[in-house]
Image: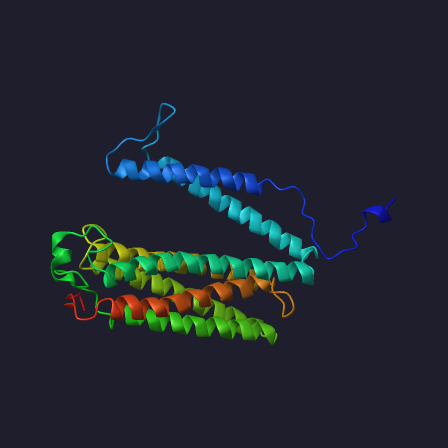
Length: 294
């Protein structure tokens, strides 16, 4: 009778989990809360079944719920790996899943870059631009002062390239059994990720144009802001890996969590290089450069 329940395959049949359902509820609440939050900021109303949802609290409740689910779900995944459920077949499928996730992120960025190139190459044709933007069919639009690509954007390019180097150092240190080198490399990568976010936040603070009233500002902030969000997510990912590394969770043979974080971070690096050349340099070519605090 015991042999009938013995596992004789490499696949992992998971126990029933509440997290898919809870995650769906959290995302649902956060989506409606986001609409209500935007209506709240604009002074509007958003009623559903007689309830006034134009409030900020619903979005943050959904956000906290999603964050909690992420913590618990990934904690369960780590526990499953410790219990030996991550066989070579399961590990391969985890890698396939990470590759598909990054591929879906690529398509997100394609959408933002597509919008930027469409607006810049076909000025006034596919967009309802303001009169100032249509004048002369120029890009950037007339009256726009752009950010100097050789100041804050160049700083951030160097920062991200260095972070990719320190993360590779951490990975190679792990493969060679150098736990101290792995922790040092991860720590430097986290610091560089936080520094990138601080520099970009200050760049936004000094930006000479706003998100609204300009197709240039809208496409610029959507592309760079979406990338900045990914840097924040990647930094959190690396912080979790650093905490796990200090607790001895990774070995040269078993370290997919760190490997997945490295894939994600290098993806963010590559996207930034394309963004730097296409939006900051090419996209602002010939336009007047705004004076900044430097």
